[in-house]
Length: 452
Image 1 (spheres, one colour):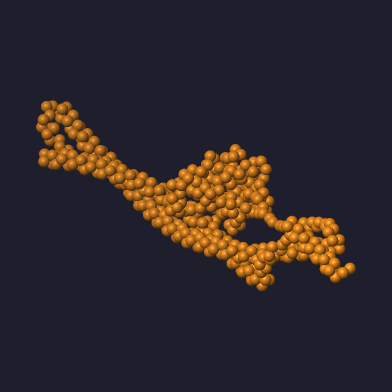
Image 2 (cartoon, rainbow, N blue to C red; image 1 turned 180 degrees about the horizontal axis):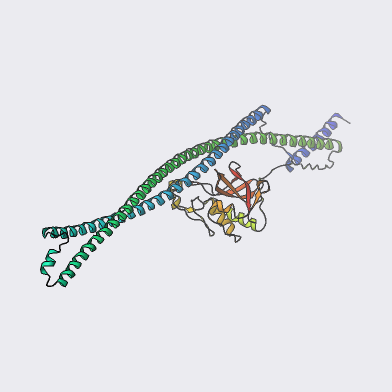
C-alpha cells in the first residue's frame, strides 16, 4: 500500500469517528459546561452557621415555653384574684343591704319613741292642768265645785265618783304611756346598736373590696408585663427563625450546587465513555453500529410530616371538630353557648380591661358547652361543675374527647379539650383567641373528665 493510500484511509477513519461524535452530540449526549462546585469548607461553614441559628431558636423556644408557663401561672393568679374580688363585691352588697335595713329599722324605732314621748308629754300636761285646778279649789281631786253644784246628796256622791274615776283613768293612761315609752326607748337602743354593727360590717366589706381590687390590679399588671415579655420573645424568635431559614437555604443551596456538580461529573464521565466507545467501534468497524446504554438512576428521598391529632371516632370526632372549627375566635369572658360564640360579660377587672363585654367569643367553659352540644350533651357555664359532669380517669389514660382542668388553691379555674398527640384546644384568657397547644402540666388536676 502506498503512503498516499494509507493517509487517505486514515483520514477516512478519522472523518467517520468525527461524524459519530457529532451525531452523538446532536442526539443530546453532549454535556454542558461544569456548574459551580462549592468546597467542603464552604459547606461546613454554612452548616455551622445554620446549626448556630438552630441552637438560638431552640434556646428562645425554651425561654418562650418558660415564659408561657409563667404567663399561665399569672393568669391562674389573676383568675383567683378575680374570684376574690367578685366575692368581696357580693359581701359588700350584702353588708350595704343589711346596713340600709338597719337604718330603716332605727329610724322607725326613733319615730315610735318620739311619738310615745309626745303622748306622755300631752298626758302629763293634762294631769298637771287637772291638779292645778284642784289645788286652786283646795282639793286634791277637784271635788269642791262638784259639791257646790250638787242639787242633792245623791248628785253630790255621783259627781264625786265621776271625778275620782277621771283622775284614776288619767293616772292609768299615764302609767301605760310610761311603759310604752320605756319599750320604745329599748327598741330604739337595740336598733341603734344593730345599725352600728351593720355600719362596721359595711366598712369591713368595703375595705375587703378595695383590698381585693388592689390585689387584682397588681396581678393584672404582672400578667400584662408577662404578655409583653412573651411578645418580645416571640418577636426575637421570629427574627432568629428567619435567619435560620436563610442559613438553611444557604446550606441547601451549596449542597444543591454540589449535587448538580456531581450529577454533571457523572454525565460527563458517561459522555466520555460513550465517545470513547463510539470512537473505538468506528476505528474497528469503520461504520459499525453502536449500542445504547440506559443508566437511569435516582436518589432516595425522605420526608416527613407532623402527625395529625389522633381523634376518636363518632362522638369524640364530632366534639373535637366543633371545637377546632372555632380556632381564632376571640376570647370573651362569659361568652359562648350551645349555638356558638356570644357577647362576653363585665367582671369589673381584667375582662373589662380587655373589653370582653364588647366582644363576641368564648371563654374556656363556653367553648366546652359548644363542643359537646354537638352530641347532645348539656354542660353548665362553670368549669368547676364541668369537672364533675362525667367519669374521672387518670391523666395517663386520657384520650381524645376528654376534658382537662387546672386549679389554683384547690379551686378549678380553667378547662380545655384533649385532642390527642399531647395537644389540646382551649380558649385561654382575655386578650387571646381559641388555639391548639401542647398540654400544660403545671397546675393541672390529676384526672381527666370523660363524657363520651
